[in-house]
Amino acid sequence: MEELRVNEYNLKDIYTIEAGNFVTAGEASSNIKTLLKRLGVNSSKLRNIAIASYEAEINLVIHSKGGQMELLVSPNEVIIKIDDIGPGIENIELAMKEGYSTAPDSIRVMGFGAGMGLSNMRNNADDFKIESKLGEGTHICMKFNI
Amino acid sequence: MEASIFHSVTLDQTKCKGCTNCLKRCPTEAIRVHDGKAQIIGAKCIDCGECIRVCAYHAKVAVTDPLSILDKYKYKIALPAPTLYGQFKKLESIDALLNGLLNIGFDDVYEVAKGADIITKNVKEDTTIQKKRGPLISSACPTIIRLIQVRFPELLENIVNYISPMEAAAKISKKEFAEKHNVDIKEIGAFFITPCPSKATAIKSPNGFDKSAVDGAISILDIYGSLSAALNMEIDELPKRASKHGVRWALSGGESDALDNGNAISVDGINNVIEVLEAIEDGKLSNIDFFEGLACVGGCVGGALAFENGFIARERIKKLSENLPDAVPYSKEEMAGFDFKLDYPIKPNEVLQLDKDFSIAIKKLEQIEEITANLPGFDCGSCGAPSCRALAEDIVNKRAGEMDCVFKLREKVRVLAQEMIDFSYEAGLDSEKNDKSNNDEEVDG
Ligand SMILES: Nc1ncnc2c1ncn2[C@@H]1O[C@H](COP(=O)(O)OP(=O)(O)O)[C@@H](O)[C@H]1O
Ligand code: SF4
Ligand SMILES: [Mg+2]
Image 1: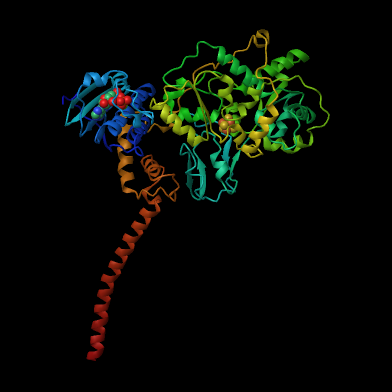
Image 2 (image 1 turned 120 degrees about the vertical axis):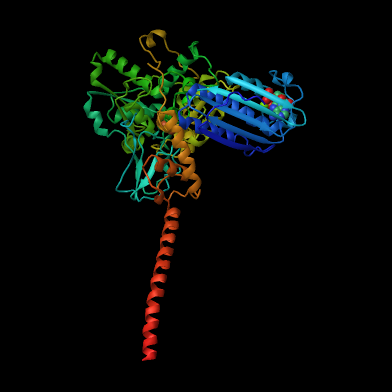
């Protein structure tokens, strides 16, 4: 997929996300949050990153077959790349719609599946790109200017 | 930075044995043990009192004002925290307690619970208070405010910008007393009877305004004996002051019940509060309008300076407040001239930031990760830091060395010992050779 920008990143971290594992769900975004706080990322921006990365992580847990999140930090920007190994999204436009969700009832009773995740990611990131191929996987890249 | 901020929670060096029990209980990793004694890093401490609760040697103490502070003022007003109501087994009524305070020498009493009623009413009627991203956050517990300053600065904008009931009670009671008795307000001292070290800190170093209207914090434990003896004596019928809701601010959930607007969530115990703040940060609680977080289990009844077990006190307070009115009417004139809002927004505490310079912060972070990866990962605390990661950070900041890790030290000692053995073995072989040659000579001879 098209890279947002090639840059020198001073910090790079990779987190593996397991499908269906609710014990560890949220740990990656929590780590990302802690780390960015230590670096002194502006409060309001941190909030954007926290919300977007949490939604991305949860989507991997509930909708995908697993994948990884990559954090890249440079003095001017934070990039979070999310790549999973399937099943992919058939109609991205539809999936992006607020309120649209394919989450089954078993997931909804857990409080997930409001259908706001992807739109929240788009709204909180300064740049948001998504690509997906059915049968292959979904790739998301979010950029935050700091 | 706030390096010189006053802290109620302090260490009694003579009692500290240098054990590491308090290290891990500290929610902001503000404790280190060096040279056999604990140290509290002032800039990180939020006065939650967790270390006071866990220290078996009572080396962690809460500094409040001594009773002698009362002598500094000609007129003294007691501001009892509603938690005080739950401390006595045989207390017949709230009136009996308020009279007890007069009996032991206060000139007047003003219930902080009434301050709570007034703050509740103001917040309820303030249409400028808007839900930001996520719920509004209560400003009642100073420990939680400090926690947010250190660990959740991005949530500061959600905090209700009103002063605490204690401050409101001090402001109103002093003005009323001065007017009623026609005395100079400077001659009046208002004293909070506190279950809480953090409130003592909040009086000395307020957040959101410059100077507290409260003149001192007296620990419930310090006043307990004399007050017990002065209860249930002759009781003057005092005008009913606080409502049921005001009194129940002492209990977790009390403030939310009093506010009664929209979806509220009340959480007590500092670790529970941290978990829920994390959730708010992630945008998980967008359906909630109000968040009440209290650092102590059960709310202020669980405060570190309370005498009675918090759960027992809770039931007593519920009983004592049962027949109080739901709301106390107060006139607009009564409140005219008072401003209960904070003077300025609460500022973040940047103590967790690794460096002001972003590039240096990144470098430090890399070094921390590298060092952490090399440490055993047991988080045992023997080095005097609460976790291996915290030690790594101390090493990067040149406040500790790798050999502070007992396992690293053991490894090093083992290597050294091995080198010595190898060395003496080699040396030994040489001397053995010599011995042999000597022997040979002897045999030969
Ligand atoms: N990583 C993913 N892999 C496959 N499908 C996804 C993925 N992320 C999102 N989707 C699809 O897009 C829909 C909308 O996602 P989202 O806006 O996060 O809402 P929700 O997660 O509440 O369903 C999901 O219901 C799902 O069908
Ligand atoms: S819950 Fe109450 S007693 Fe405990 S720290 Fe907060 S304000 Fe103080
Ligand atoms: Mg989602």
